[in-house]
Amino acid sequence: MRLLLAEDDTMIGQGLRDSLRKEEFSVDWVQDGKAVLLSLETNPYSLVLLDLGLPKLDGMDVLQQLRKKNLDVAVIIITARDGLPERLAGLNLGADDYLVKPFATEELIARIRTISRRLAGRTQNDISVGRLRLDPIRHELWVNDEPINVSAREFKLLHELMIEPGRVISREQLEDRLYGWGEEIASNAIEVYISHLRKKIGAEVIQTIRGVGYRIGSTL
Image 1 (cartoon, helix red, strand yellow):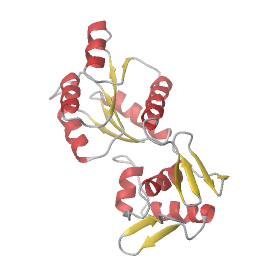
Image 2 (cartoon, helix red, strand yellow; image 1 turned 45 degrees about the horizontal axis):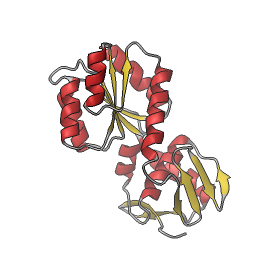
Image 3 (spheres, helix red, strand yellow; image 1 turned 90 degrees about the horizontal axis):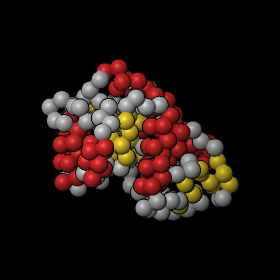
Image 4 (cartoon, helix red, strand yellow; image 1 turned 30 degrees about the horizontal axis):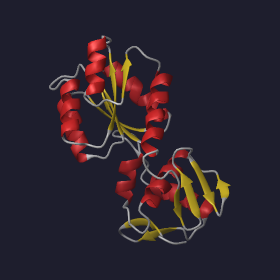
């Protein structure tokens, strides 16, 4: 799940970004309202953590604009504004949740996962391609109905390939979907994950298209 964190306080922003990355979320961090809208126009995000007191464009204005544009992204407002009018305004403008600072990071993570389950409930939970079956909510994978243990990043990579079987996805695209801005990425990270997956689910499942990228067959 790729998140966009909009927080202008450097200490809070760094702390949240690092805590969420430890939970295997991909997190990009911006510090003003205009950067939020630009990021949403150029990158795919599942959820925005939106502070209201942002420079250049207030968080409420950001929320209003992204809903007017019908951008399909969930929003959790994170703010020190604890008055009932502000809460009602944020929820009425289309926020999915409203969390008042200071809050425990564990509570924020729980709310993110609740929204993730809700979003996934709008679509088919399990994804099946041939003998592979993947549940993105429970983070479970089966091959021929036998459960397979994979790491969080291996799971996310396989999920990206299984969403559109047959489509070739480049290494750069996979890095973009698995990592947030500024995260250190080893030059061969994707190749290592794919090598591990091939050992666990079968060498023939993930195909390398030389000079282009990787794909998973539509039938296996």
